[in-house]
Amino acid sequence: MTSAPQVRGLLSALRHAPGGLLALRRFPAQHCARILDLDAVTVSLQGAGKPELVWWPQSTPGAVDMEDLQYLLCEGPLIDAATHVRPVLVADLELEPQDRWPAFLAAPAPSSWPRSVAALPLTAQGIPIGVLTGYHRQPGGLNTQRLTNLQALARTISTMAGGAPAAVPGLHRAVVHQAAGALADHEGMPLADAAKIVCAHLFATGQPLIDGSRALIAHPEAASP
Image (cartoon, rainbow, N blue to C red; front, side, top):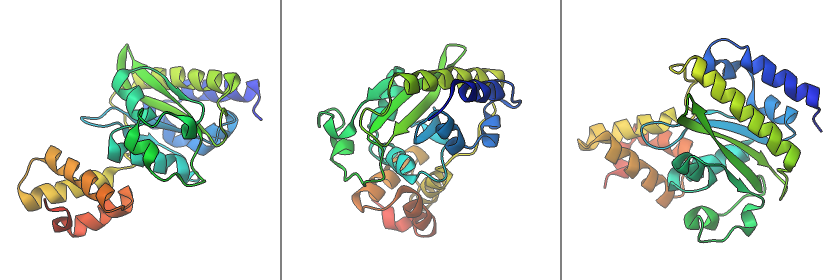
């Protein structure tokens, strides 16, 4: 259970931290999630294509795996929030209509995955820049107080981004881009096409996004069309 002074203290520390979004490196995502009484929080920033995960919990793999799957499939609550620039709230993923995100909801969901999700758009000076996502393992876990705290964190992170818009933390999926580059070089194809083929190959072969991408760097021919 969190307390209002803890939440206010976290938000104040973030607002006054120098370096824009780079300051998130000094605030472990798992620690911030505990203060907000959530199981995980993440930040993804808009890239040239899909949202890129830049702040994530090291000790809560379920949330990160769920976001990696959305990255592979190009669908899910995070993708919708980024695409339509509006909050996406899911009380229980297991009760969502299958036609909302057909491939994402049809994928096997390990017991470690969260059941409730809130994906909130981030903006800097009115420009969409990414998504803050909060997770709770229980259905309906994102109650009014938790959601209010998450919304306050979204506003704070948006303010941080406006202070130093060029400062971006490291990418969780940098290795995926490296794999796309290796395939593009091997096949002589555009990088954007190679990136799509890498994701399609990993999904079709059931490989994890990160480990599968590492393997493709060494053997890009495995994904040759």
